[in-house]
Every structure is written in structure tokens, then in C-alpha cells.
Length: 160
Picture 1 (cartoon, rainbow, N blue to C red):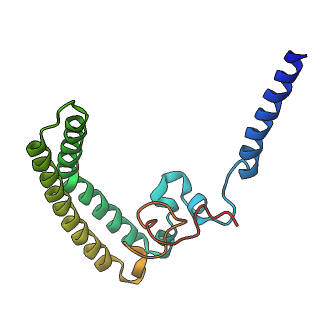
Picture 2: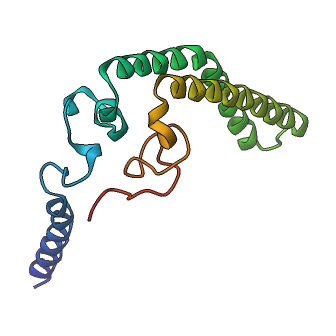
Picture 3: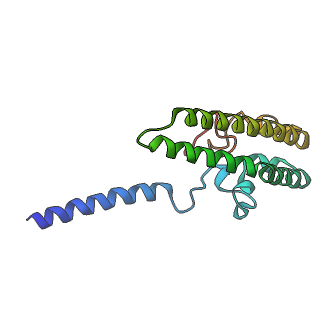
């Protein structure tokens, strides 16, 4: 009797998990531009809804600008991550050194400030390349609530 009850509970659990997977369907595309569109196989940038409004030349210029931003800020990002990891380790010790922690917090803040300045420069250059993109760089309606623009209100996962 116990074996049958356990089998029934396990079967119900598996069916409940499968229901969630089947609810999305095989391609998840629906009406959301994030999951479909021309060049979708090229990666997340190719699926960005704002990119479809740009000319080929603007897209290439923005791709180059994006890569330049990543290349220019890699050392800053590494420094931020290293200092953050060091801070986390210091906080886990039995007797954390308050002065060293304060010094690391200040260092992380300064590094993040430098990164923010470079990010503003990046956004201004992006607007020069594609001024008609408007709010799509930085703050504005999010691209399905994901990615670079996804910090503000948007339609979430585009499940209507």
C-alpha cells in the first residue's frame, strides 16, 4: 500500500513539473521580439528589438562601440570583482579587520564610479551613432524586462 501511495505522489510531482515546461511550448517565441526575429541565431544582440530599427551601418558601429566599451572596462571590472571577493572573504573571518574593510569598500566605490563615468561616455557615443533610438539606450522601457534596458518597467517575459 505504501509503495502505491509513494508511486502516485511521485507521478503527480513529475506531472506538475512537466506542466510548467509544456506551458511555455517548444520555442517560447510568441509575440516577444526578444525570442524571435531576423538573425536570432546570431545571439542576444541580434534579437534586440531596437536593433531592427537601425541601418546595417549603425548596427555595425554600435557593435564596435560595445566591444570597445567591454575592452576598455575589462580591467576596471576585474578590479571591482577582485576587491569584492576580497571583501567577502574578509567579512567571513572570525575577527574582520574594520579598517581594511572600510578601505576596500572605499576602493570598490571609487572603481564603480570610474566604471559609471565610462558607461555614460559609452551611452553618449551610442546616441551619436543612433539618435533616433531615443530612450532605448539606458533608462526607458525595457526590452521584455531583460538585458541592458531591463532595469525599468517593461512587459516582463512577454507572456500575454
